[in-house]
Image (cartoon, rainbow, N blue to C red; front, side, top):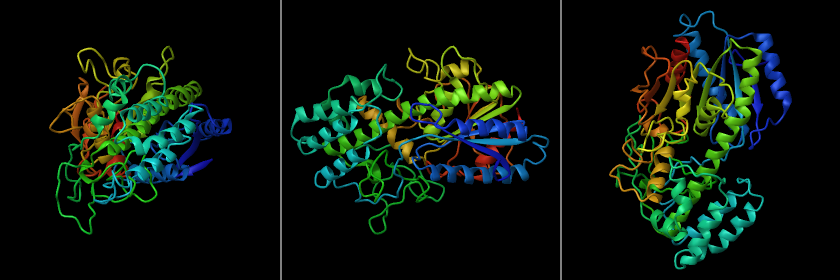
Length: 467
C-alpha cells in the first residue's frame, strides 16, 4: 500500500476519452480502501500538466501541507477521522508558465510567423481528429498569408475550428461565437490589444495587466509575483524558452498574427475543457460510483486544480440518469472554467453548465472556490473570449465581464455563492452545506499554480470538519 505523507494513497490513470488506462490501478485502490478502512477519501486532480511527474509533485506538495495542518491546527477537530487519497492522472496539454519578458512576445509581424508555426507544431497530437496533424500542417502553410489575404484568414480559422469537439458549442466562454463568425472577423477582433483586469500580487509586483509602463529591469517584468509559480502564463504556447509565448506583458501585442496566436490559445483551451469534462463525467465518475458501491459510508472530498477543477465538477455532476456520487466537499483551486459555471439564469435565458450540481444538492457539504486577481493565466484567457464576442468592457475578465473565469472571480450570478477570504492558519470559517464559498485569495495565492499553501490546506480541512 503506497503512502503519501502518512495518507494511504493510490493512483488511477485515465485516457483522453475517459477510459481507465490500467485496471490494476483500480484494483489497487479498492484493495487499499479495504485494508486502510478510511472514513474520508481525498480525490485530487491536476490541471494542465502533461508530465505525470509534475502531477505527482503537485500532489506531494499539496498533501505535505494537508498533513502539516491535520497534525497541527486540525488535530483536535478531526480526531478519529481516518484519511486516504486518490491521485487522478489524465493527459492534459501543458500551458507554458515561464516568466515572460517585455520583448518576448512582441515580435509579431517579424518573428510572428516563426512563433505561430512553432505553436502549431506543438498542438499536434492534442486533438482527437485523426486528420488533425494534416490540418495543422495546412494551417502552417497559411501563416505568411494571414496579414494580407482574407481567404487565408478564413481558411486558417476554419481548419482550427474543425478540430474542436463537435456538438452544441458552449455559450459561457464564447465558443458559440467562434463557430458562428467568419475566420476573418474572428482574427480581426482578436488582433486588437487586450488589457485584462489585474492587480498586485502578494509581493507587490504586477499581478495582471492593468498596470502599463511600470519599471522593468533588463526588459523583464514579473507578473503575479511568483516566477515559476504560475504568475505569468501563456495558454498552450511553446514552453521551451518563453520567447514564443502567446501573451506579452500587458497584453498589448496587436495585429493579425497576434490574433492568430490568441486563437491558438483559445483552441487549446476549448479542447482541454472538453477533455476534462469527458474524463470527469465518464471515467472518474464511474470510478467513484464503484468506490461508493463498495464503501457507501465513505466521505468523498474532491479537489481539482485548473482544468482539474472542471474535471471534478463534471465528476460530481456525472452523466444524466446516473445516481450522484454525492461528495461531502468539493474544492476548486484556481479552476479554469466560466465564472457562470454554477449560475442561475446568467443571461436571462441560460443556466451555467454545472447548475444541476447545485439544484440537485449533489454535494452534501460546502463547495470551496479559490479565486484571485493574481491568476494571470485565467485572467488573460477570458478577455480573449470577450474579444471574439465583440464585448467592450473597462475591466475585461473581471466579475462584471460577460466572460470571466471562476479562478479569477469566483462563482458569479449564483444565489448560493457566499463571498469571503482565504484565511491564514487559525482563521475561523463559517462554511455551510449547500453553499459555494468564494475565497478571495489575493493575499496568499500569487499565481495560477501557486496553490500548495498551508492556507489552502487549512481551508480544505475546515470544510471537511463540518461534514
